[in-house]
Length: 123
Image (cartoon, rainbow, N blue to C red; front, side):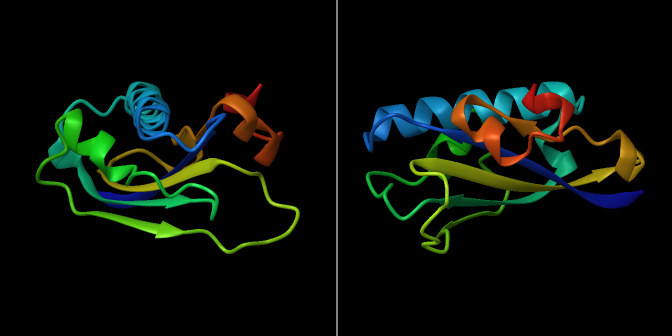
């Protein structure tokens, strides 16, 4: 079994805790569904980042709320690149899987679809 990375991103309209948590829950649920992850034990760890303009809450709280209580989670701030997408939440899940890298589904929602127009999930 290999450890694979699964990327995802979404955005919010405002820096409000409930909006960040809701968008993060939506993103995580879509990542889990798209990659057929049914047990949180399959997830090795998750790294969340937010653009520097999001400071009202930790996206990892949304992961805990959906049941990822034993998964190691980390939150960090993205580099403040002038042309980067504002109000953006990103995640990198590390999962144990038998899937090939080409079978992994990365998910980009809302305005974050612009980050990866080459991804089928962004269409």
